[in-house]
Length: 448
Image (cartoon, rainbow, N blue to C red; front, side, top):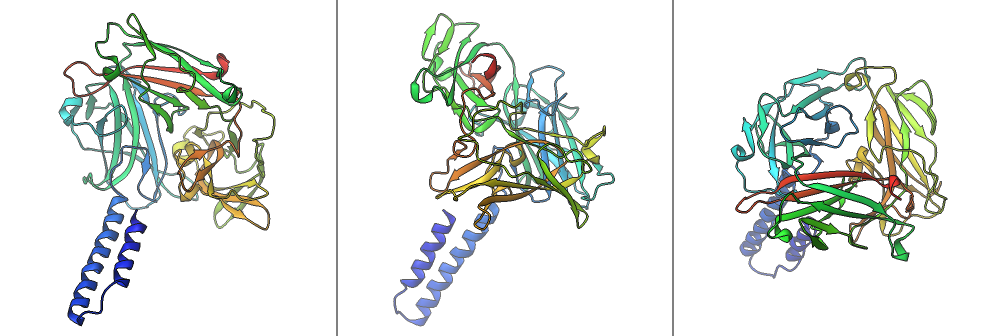
C-alpha cells in the first residue's frame, strides 16, 4: 500500500502541466510534503501496537511466554488459580533501560474490546519490569528480563484473551514486544476427537476435529453467545475462527463437520540441537568458531513431500532454551549462528521460502527468509539463535496471496502428530465481553 502511494505521487509529478513557475513550485512543494508525511506515517506505523505476537525492536531476542513449570506449556492459565504466565526476553543493548508493561483484554478474535482497565484488572495499568540479569560468560552480551503475571502489581479480574505489551520507558506508544496469553475459567466441558476425513481428497493429508461442547445451561442464542476457536500447535496464522455449531442436542453444541474443521496434517518437525558447542549432535554437519561467535552448520535438508512418513518425535514446532549441563540457561546460554540449507533443483516460482516455527514467531519475515543459490541449487539462510533445542520446518509464502503452506517442502501426512486446542468463549446477556469458559487439548496420534 505504501509503495502504491509513492508511485501515485511520482505519477502526479510527471503529469504537472506547463504552468507558471510559481504554481509549479507550489505543486511540487505540496506533493513533497505529502511524500514526507507518508514516510513518517510508515515509520510510525511500524511501532504501532498490534494485538499479536510481535517484536518491534532489533535489539530484542528470544521472547518466550508460557504457563509456569515448563517452557513448552502454552500460555494459558486457569482463572483464580496459582498458575502464572511467564515472560522472558533478551536485550542486546548494553545500556540500562526501564521497561514497563501493560495488559489489554481482547475479543475472542484478538481485537481490542472497549473495556476499561479497572473492568478486567486490579492494580496499576503500567508497571516496571524490575527482574533482569546480565548474561554470564557469553560472547554475545545481553540482559535477560523476566516477568510473572499475575503478581503483586496486577491481578486479572476476568477470563478471556489478553495481550501483554512491553514498552520503552513509561510511553505506551513505544512498544518493544507484544505477546498473547489466555485466562480460562473452565465451566463448559469439551469432548473432542481427531479423526481421518471421510472425503477422499483429504483422507491421507488432513486431520479433522470432531467435538461437542457441554454447556451447564441452555444457551438462548448460541450463534451469538458462544464462539469457538480451533488451533493447531498453538499457531494463530492458520487458526479457525467463528465455527458455528452444526446442531444442538439438549444443552450440548455439536460440531461434526466434514470440511470446516479440517487442518493440513503436515509432517513431524525437523530439529536442531544447539545445546553444546563442543560436541556435534545428530544433524549438525560442523561447528566452527569465527570472530568470537560459534557457527552451527546443519546438514543439508531435503524436501520431504515425496519421502515416506517417518514419524520422528518432535516438540510441534517449539523451542527449549537450554545449555547442556547447566541449571541457569536464561543467562548462561550463548547466541550462535545457525546455518540452514534446503536442497531444491529449481526455485519456487512466485513464492518465497522461510525457516518457520516458534524460532520465527510463526511468522515469515526477513530474518528467517531463505535465498536461492543458483550455483548449488540450495536455499540458504542464517539465524542468530540462543542455545537450546529447536524444532523447525520450511514453508513457502505465496507473494501474491500471502498464503503460508508447507505441502511442497514438508508434505502432508495424516499420521503426523499434532496438538489441537479448542477454545470456547461465552458472552452473558448484557455483557460487553466474551469469557473464555473452556479449553481442550487433544493429541492427534491418540485418536487416528
